[in-house]
Length: 281
Ligand code: PAF
View (cartoon, rainbow, N blue to C red):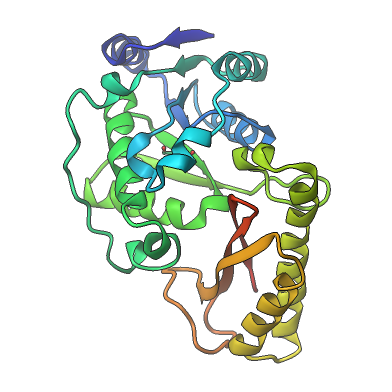
């Protein structure tokens, strides 16, 4: 595996491959890799000739400096995992390489940036759009692979690609889960054993909530159920639980079978904020 820290050198290598007719697959990450990331690498390997992974903890998407500080960083271990997985190129830039100057661009994503994580983490998706547009410009992938755990992020990135008229296919890959159902996330490793145990109830509560839909319960009743379940343990602090239209994320007030619906949750377990989602159809 080739490791590049310099964007011009990376772009040069990729341009040569492109000229040979090779298709580039790209997996942007913030490191602290787990099986979920490796499944994105696999998807890219199966669907492209050259797979590039980037590891960059993007400061502009953290609205809480403490969250940025505690975000796990382990580039050597990540590089070993990528090498073993068969990734061809790792891009590992420093902050100055990505942001030689302050990025002042403001993206407009309408409702996508105003609800759920957009509302709770102001500026977060703008920061994601800044870094992803820069990385796309360097790598110029044919396809880019993202995990569906970050459902709203995938929608924002699809919209970004549309707005910038980029010829990139954004591929949403399934969420990988731990044996107890917890969605894989780099943040899981920040949980202490008690928090980790508590976190495993999140997917179960979401599944139980989904069942209520089929019992004919209203959205308010389903939300009350989730709130009530989480109130049993002081470690939890619910940030949001919403049921939205799966195709545009507009919040739903009632459930009917003509609209695909999805439930999305953000919950603090101790200090660590976890997100997950579950299609309700
Ligand atoms: O999902 C992530 O890890 C990040 O938000 C991304 C897409 C790599 C941008 O920094």
